[in-house]
Length: 336
Image 1 (cartoon, rainbow, N blue to C red):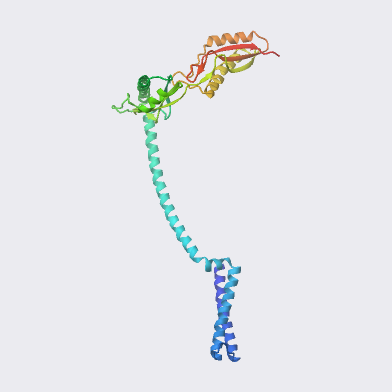
Image 2: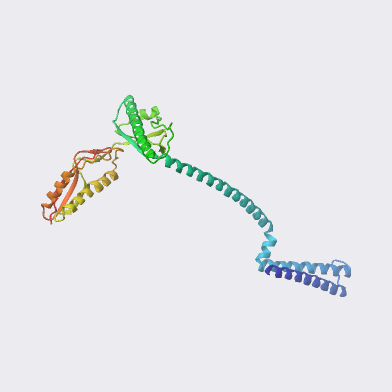
């Protein structure tokens, strides 16, 4: 309804302008006014036209001042038209993008389904970036010896790959899944060892820990793509340093004291070692040897005290990045 009333107002204004212009011109003709040397009849026409123009200017000025819609329609029409064209162009582009995204979504869903089916048939052997093995390269080791060490890592990875493939193959068969007869369980270990890498290792003045890792997710029957990284072999704990410690009440039950010791050794010690920079061996872990009979004996010794006992896990020797984590356990009565 707003647009209808605006059109109606413009029609009324047009009529008023025409009437006023004619009326003023008619009056000027009767008064026989002359301007610029024109005859009264022409003067009345000029006055009529000028009055109409003046009224139109005043009307438009008022509309521009008080009507935002009129201002936009009169002054910004070209700009709005261009913006509409740009928006239509963007709309078309967005529709194309949506179509392309839908197509990409379908392709991704198909790929996910393919991978899901493959995973159900062919389990994952190694995850991407999963460490396979570590080796310590002493400083100033000759390049030939370094290459032999890297080749030994490759041979070990090949054996591990075959062993894991064999285990997973048996699991898949036990599920009743039909496995292709030409499935390659041995696989190949693909590595690229540039000469610069070996020469760089030989030139470093510090011992280096070399890590061999899986570059990609490797599934049953895949070849293993492996890469290498290096880092300094640092001393993590010096001999005699307290690694972790805890306090236990000797009046607790034997079971509670045993649980305290297991937590201290299995959880706290491991977390502290990893947080300090130790690297667990993929096969052996941190090399923590916990003789359970000795732990039970230690629990019995703690129960002979009266009061709170401080238990310390102390480095038995200098412990480096690759370990092993050798330690001894000390206990003493907490002084009140």
